[in-house]
Length: 194
Image 1 (tube, rainbow, N blue to C red):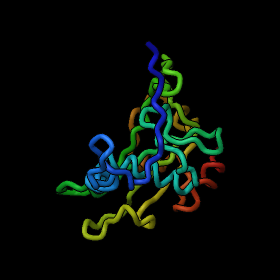
Image 2: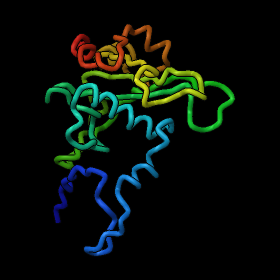
Image 3: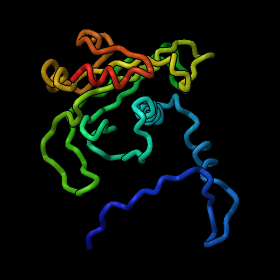
């Protein structure tokens, strides 16, 4: 038996749960609202950061692939890894979180061919580090792009300077001279790193 990948049909949110052919009246966007409103949460903030970068690059027409070797593909050639961090979390804190990003080497899952490489490496051409830099818990709003900072770095810099490192803290990242940019300028920053 050969079970290839299931084609994902993009949903609008208006689809409803059903019993057989009968709609329950409960829309898919109600599930999304119920399950995905906490975008300060680490795991969901990471997915949201991918969407932010994709929206800035105007590449949101397809669907996000959960287990792909890299997060985004720009102009059918530039592989992008998106990482996020935040000073403020959705849970109670005694102090701001330390800022760090994962940069570990991986063995990719190929979701298309179902073949797995054995080479452990960084799979992207460029990293976009997304920092929700706002520090006031009362006014933090991940939907406000003015509260984010974006740092773009060619993967080769990481490979040369930190070949085996699994995480990087903000001060160490800044020492590598990434391009800092705002929402609206990520594409230009990516091309300037190549």
